[in-house]
Image (cartoon, rainbow, N blue to C red; front, side):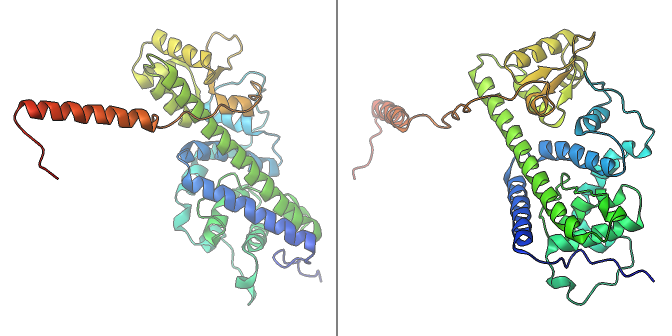
Length: 339
């Protein structure tokens, strides 16, 4: 009779494993805190879904990268990328997964793991990240589709590991199914994977915020920004676009939309990635850098512009305005009451 599988939530503790667990928890909490505070959350979640979905499909044996999921999401061919040579039917499930994540915070973790679970008495005393690992591994062994991998971000939220559902946290590992007894390797690899995913997502969020700041500086420096602001706001949630789409969305002529995109490209806010095709495709700067279409900016970023004018000048203008008001009131025979 085969011995029961080892419980991944009770590993053989070592100082190095404790350190790895701490690093994973810190990386996830930093990302979760930033997502709670940023105004670029919608743009980040859009991008995080591509990386999480690609990780889930790779664990199913599909040779695919994040950029391929991105291209399929917009149904536009990308230069230098060959069509995905697979008939894998789960490639079309990205939008339904997004919709599930939007409502995941309302669900209990038992709703996410459709199994009959016999949990030990000390279950609630075990680290949350390791409880998530054990639940995810049981689900992965029972269900051979990508559903267990895709449920992991929602599971972390339902268990209380994260306040926000973070779609990038898909630490899919084939060993959960193929080598479930190798606990000594699975647990640290899982924790290191979570750390790496959280740190990469944090860098991506910083790149989005830097792109927004660069766009704000560019618009402020333009004498006549026109529709640049509206275009750049749209690119945050629709980072791949064409003149035809911009013309339809912003109610411009096709020629005007092309000129607007060319102007944004000249300001280094978008990158043309159409590779001399008959149609033009433009990509937001942060994704163009991430996917290797352009090199990352080098050197120290420019200091942010002062948000308020110098206080001395502001006070001087205020004093002048008050003096003018006093003079006008004096001409009308109105005098200020004595102190």
